[in-house]
Image (tube, rainbow, N blue to C red; front, side):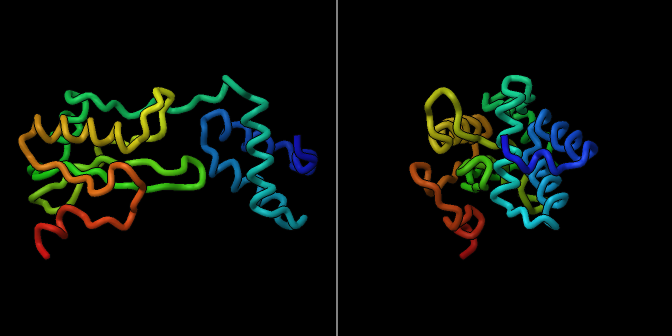
Length: 169
């Protein structure tokens, strides 16, 4: 464990541990970093302190369940959004915690916009998130009888053109 842990006040330790146990990594890092920044703790060191707490707690960390990717669950989420679904779209995104992942959205007609359906992370089944998202997105689009758009299923590309921009150049 990092020696920085010893410099934290008990209340901050409890806050960090509570965030780690609920898998709120960013909130835990923020608490460590803000508490020890006056001692010139860097963000990387704060990440290391939190990583050590994840290792300490191991299986007790309550990781969120992955979003369901079956057609009935996705169709129910799509139906819960206001307006008619006119397409299903998969978008790459990423962060320092999860790396690259794919977001499935329902493109809505009126009101114009989009509705969140699922986030697809790397999974223990070995399939990359692009493959899993493409399978689920195509199945849902087929079920809803709308187009599916995923311009880069094999490689992360968060700058790929969106479905709506291709419909109205």
